[in-house]
Length: 224
Image 1 (cartoon, rainbow, N blue to C red):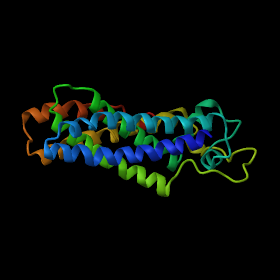
Image 2 (cartoon, rainbow, N blue to C red):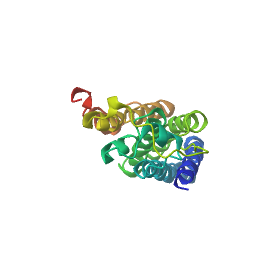
Image 3 (spheres, rainbow, N blue to C red):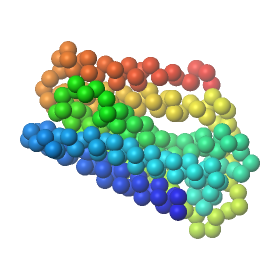
Image 4 (tube, rainbow, N blue to C red):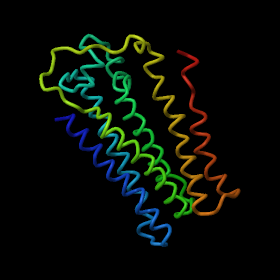
């Protein structure tokens, strides 16, 4: 049941990302205040939904639910808890779910902070961020679903890749993604500014914190 909740939350997040892509963009073009402001709750809702999905997958790994194909292929009952948890993103499907979680996190942060940001610019930036999210949601749901079930669940899993069973490598992907995916917010602001036709000093001040927040994340590749 937990896996189905995670899958359903991911589908709804995809629908919300499509709403976030088009409605605020049209609102900013037409000057419709309600549509412009819809970008903020949409970004927050999208993050909440994908967080539910990620937590559901994490629960499946922690409880060794081998009826979930991904858990069977990347975990084992004898694994220490650290590797059960890191097994969530120690594979293609789970790492893509972590990717969209961090993508939605930055969108929610942009929706929540900096009250001085012009509403139209924020709406357009969140619309671009929503479009990026929609593309990744579609990829996950149609080609890399992490919540696939096995008809006949085995008693144990096939274990996590031995190369990933190291504390440094266990926490490497989340830190790496915070940097890589965080730059999507800077891209969204850049594209929003181009749509709006204003790339000036004020815009540079608004986008600077997002660029620095992504570029300052420590890269654990040098520690592994």
